[in-house]
Image 1: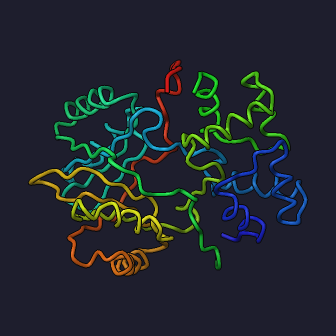
Image 2: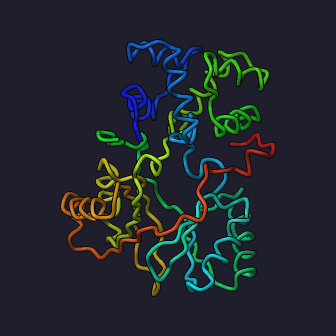
Image 3: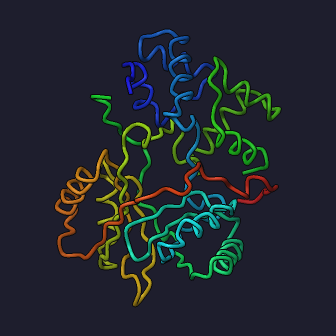
Length: 153
Length: 165
C-alpha cells in the first residue's frame, strides 16, 4: 500500500475535532498548505480504497440506547453456523472469534435492557448455547482516534 | 436532544460527504440552516453524545491485523486508578470496567490493544503491565482469530422518534 504524504496526514491528523465550518476540507487544506481540491481528491481516494470507514461521529456508549458485550462458549465444529445465526440480528455490530473457552464475543446495541434481553433469549434459543452478558460499568477511555504508524506503508 | 438531533446523528453515522460544502448538503436533507446544523453537532459534542468527530480509519486495511482483548482481575479498590492509567497508554484502545461472573469469570477490567502483528501486541502488553503496576493481578489475553461481523454501530433508537434525554 503506497500512501502519499497527504493521505498519511489526512489519516492521522483529523480523527478528532474535524473542522466544524462551512468548508471543512478547505480548512484542512489551509492547515496542510495544499489546495482544497487536493484534499478532496485524497479523501475520496482513501474512501474508495476503504482505508477509512467514514468521516463521522463515534457515539458515546450508552448515551443512546444500551450497549452490551456478550460471550458464548461454542464448540468449534458449529462455530461458523452459530456466528452466522448471531450476525442475522440487526442489533449485533461486532462479532469475533477469540482464543478462549469463551470463544465467541459480540456486541449488541438495543433500545434498553429489556430489548437486549429479548434478543439474547432469542439467540440462546436459536443456537442452543447460553449467552453471558458483560454490561459496561465504567468507560475510562478518552477517544482521540487511533494513532497509525504509517512510516513504511 | 430532539428528533432532529437523532436524525442528524443517523446521517453522521453514515458519514460526511466528500464535497466542498458537506454540512450544507446535510443541512438541506434535514431542512435546517447550515449554521444551525453546525451548532447542533457542536452541542452533541459538548454534552458528550458524540465522543469523537472525525476520520474513522480502517486499521485492519492499514496493516493493524492483530487485535487482543485483555481482561484483568484487579481489586475493586484499584480498578479506577488502573483503568485511568491504562486509558492513557497510546496503544490502548477502549478501556472498560465490567462486572465479574462469580465462579466463571473473575475479570473486571477490559482493554483492547491493536498492533501490526501478534508479537508487537504481546510486547506492548508486557510493557503496559509494568507501566500500570499490573504485575500482581491475573489476566487473560484473548486474541481475535476471526472476525464474523464488524460495522459501525447501528442504533435502533435512531430510527424511532424520541424526544427525551
